[in-house]
Length: 226
Image (tube, rainbow, N blue to C red; front, side, top):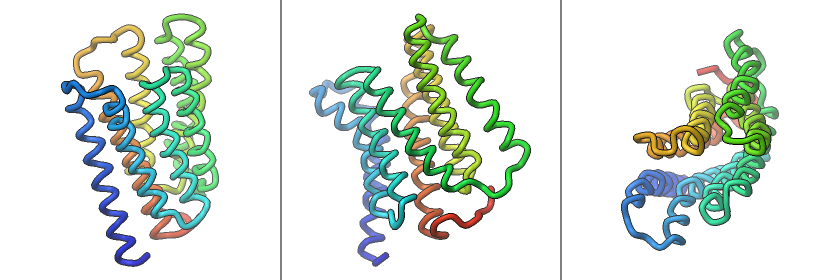
């Protein structure tokens, strides 16, 4: 990549971080709904642009698509509703899972294997218990299964655990807190900040873990667990 291209990537990354962090203060501003929704989606949309500028193969485009769908889910949640947003995020999880399966780690530690096996049943049980009614429990279970598969395959992929692996678990934690906010504790102190911090921080770590690994090592070689 040329120096100009690399500089553009870095500018886009900084813009993504600024957009994601600065979204929080908008909660206390009287902004037009369209502006607030666009601001919410801007952080992850710019991460998708950063990934797209970095993409040189199918894996690079898969992470770009996953991030773009997540940004769309952010916007759809406020502009349309929870169910269409959940379907959009489910699509993002499916694309991310395909990426991670294409980049499976050659050898797993017992801890990585255990986490991959228990994540889905544990998360589905939690989401079911937090659902306010059987209808919500049903579609949340489907969504949570896709989320768990995404996180489990991320944790067992060749991408660094300290970025992509931890980032995927942060996304899981953000979703569990979202279920708490939508269910038993809608006004828990600091819950909105915790959800957004985990969500945007997780997306950033996932993006950097994947794009930097692909940039440095190219498609499919074995990398260190850390």
